[in-house]
Image 1 (cartoon, one colour):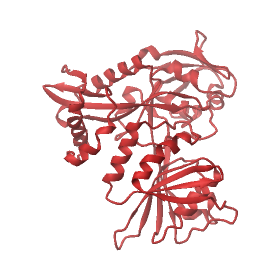
Image 2 (cartoon, helix red, strand yellow; image 1 turned 45 degrees about the vertical axis):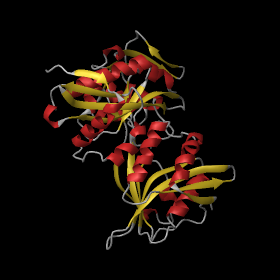
Image 3 (cartoon, one colour; image 1 turned 90 degrees about the vertical axis):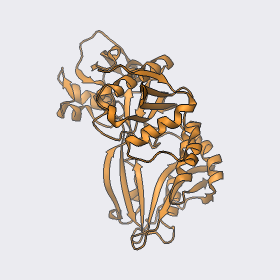
Image 4 (cartoon, one colour; image 1 turned 30 degrees about the vertical axis):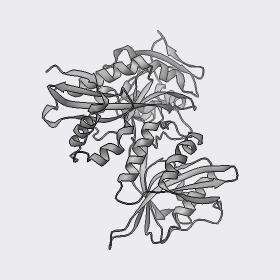
Length: 398
């Protein structure tokens, strides 16, 4: 394997890293205008490059906090911009970059890392597993009707882009994180949001919902009109604090004039939008797929941070890429800690990420050969112990 120089990039090198990453996605290089809009997305000291005379690979991250089952938040790294130049793939560049990034995570006390995977074959070898699932669904606005008991909702106000950029960060921070997997949004994430809005071919529209206690939800959407195709309203973001805001925002979205279909992307798989309708068949799910892939960087800290319900269980975790995580952990309603007791269930860190957030049950992992039962009843006990009230969902694309 070739030796590569791995180092943190200077700000002057961020554009070259962005262009390298875009090239791996078969996209054009940034224009000067696009590069200018994107300066704020880079958190200082978090973009890494691999060099073999020239830059041949890159990745970056920004800091956030991740909500785990039970409601606590842990330090998280949101990983993005991952790419290796096409003439240097399969030569160890990605492995070297990942090792350097994980070393940085350990120094900073990062408990978990998450990313959106462009390909499903890449990241499991570094310990990432599908931690959250999401669905894409659409509603026929010509036939959909809200049932009589849907809340009337509050006042809807449309914001200018400048007002949205000012108000949404504060509103998002004030909303509850009801799903495990939700994350905080830093100034670097919001810089990317601004870049997306200003670069969109179709105008990005923001509305906020005001209930009895003030602002309690918002939606961001665009409308695509390409005659003679149906007119589609695409929901890019939808956040709400309570049922009234949920109903009010959907009442508005389904009432926008000159729209044939509302399509919502990467929504929680347990979001009850069909139940708003007199005919639930007017809401059609086109896909359920992986949303965020998550890496438990510090398994002991991650297990100790979430809550559990059920009888104690000892699990054995295998982590080949970060072997310090390997070992046995006693899980109970009192918490989690390393133990010398015999394990009842064995799984690797990839499967643990699926189990940890509730995306998959232990019994399903056993059926699929991703976990091994070492004592009778272990899978059923783990199903209860790791169960979650709400399904795992991030909702913050990066």
